[in-house]
Length: 441
Image (cartoon, rainbow, N blue to C red; front, side, top):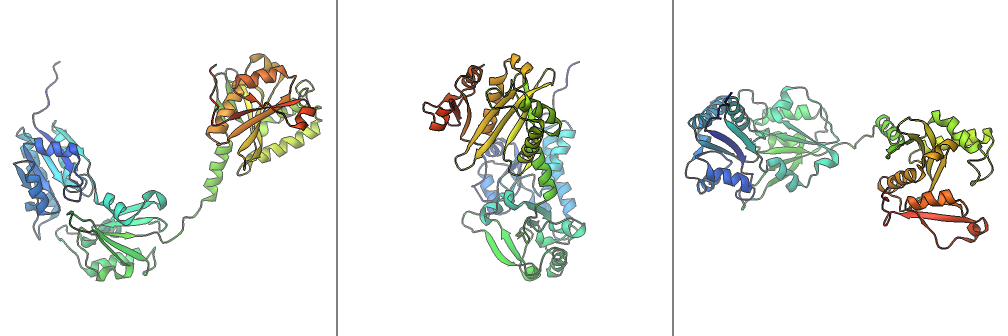
């Protein structure tokens, strides 16, 4: 079945930014220049004249506003005017000050209606008053968080305010207007807003009245006052009120502990292995390794079970404190999930940013040839996630299997051993974050 072609008309709503000539993107400019007709809703008549230099047919949407007329009716007429030209097969561009999708219902409604009728319609972003506010007031919304409310909405509905974050109130000049017919409400209405705010703030807490500069020759309005003084200050519908944080951020210890538990519940993966945090269920594996004479042959005398159980309890505590004093991982084969050994990072030297690396495999696990694979996974984690500068391992010079695994994992033997190591026939092998690369396997 042949698909019907989309109607010829199209609509794009662009943002011209807040300051004349400074914020228009190249793409938005091209849409304005190439449109058959441009509908403009801008903050200043000079901006409309500027748009007229880019397109010969610029039509102001400001004429739909009138004192005593519902803004809802004005918005419906604006949408109808734009869609009439789209239906006539024209390329229509709506040029709105700031961002066309921020505190601007007309672009959203026009685009939605055009799409429902099968026309191509889209929105291009622009620099909004919010963007300028962050720059002019030096606010980073990521530092304490930011709450944004239209002032009347905050007054008419029960909203939850967090005094530890910034509070940004928009359209304060018409705060409390339920008629949608006014262009300003007075101090008595703003007093109601103050009463709402003082549920969460002291009346003497700082408030900043802000208004963006719309012309390059202007300076932004930044007037610092108090919440209590807001009714007495001249505030029009384009002004914004910013309430800085009034309380410190309160730590959520319960959530922090849950996250800390997740951090401690480490899981790494390699080609054949899963390496997960040692847990209480790994007690028998731990004891079997340290009590086995063959496994301990190159480490020292095998432990008694009582000594192994005591050490296991200490290791669990060391891995679960904040920050952890050690990392112990259980090695399991991916295919069968059968535990075959332990790998560890311990003896942390936080000043030198070094940690000792350890690996123990059960006798049946050594046949799989996974020692180097396990070391590589743990070394990569130590450098990438823990930011250690050096990880090292020490074993006797006649331990050929350990030397082969260390070399395959990219560790390098120290050319000079300490007198104590020489006396014990021990060699130290290290990997350094600045130079180590995961060996190709």
